[in-house]
Amino acid sequence: MNTNVKIAIKLVNQHHQNVTQDINQWLNNELFTWNWWVLLAFALLPWMVWFKFKERKILIESILVGTIAIIPTTYLDAIGLDLKFWTYPVQFIPLGARALPFDMSMVPVAYMLLYQFFKTWRAFIIGLLIMATLFAFIGEPVSKAMNLIYYLKWKYYYSFFYYIILGLFIKWFVNKCRDINKNNI
Image (cartoon, rainbow, N blue to C red; front, side, top):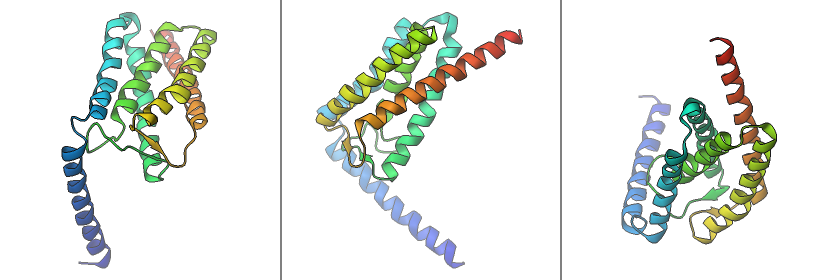
């Protein structure tokens, strides 16, 4: 067995031990705490709201909006964790996406509802600015105060610009896909 394989196997074994410790930590100290229940609400309530108010006529577009929001948000969250920009003191689940309630529920559903209710570019941008402000300068500080996230090298205004850039891209991309689809029918 060559040296690289031996090193890789050693790293996998160390990682497995760390994962086992993380799961035990989660089971003993995080699961069913009040913070965990808040994360459960953050994971479920946005989807319940969306399901109640979804517009069937644009269902596919709405789902595309949510999917596009989930992909970069989850990926960039993992990068931010790896680079130690932030950490999550309490996690909804011990494995996989660390910020599942935010990355796969609150953020995508917010964009889905924006896309659905603010159809013109002007209205969408106004709604997007309001959403980005609420999320970055109210939601994130509240989440920090509730010990759901801790920022190490991150500023709220970085998030504000991220929400704006992502929202503009999503609106442009989904509108483009919609228009291409209409022209091909």
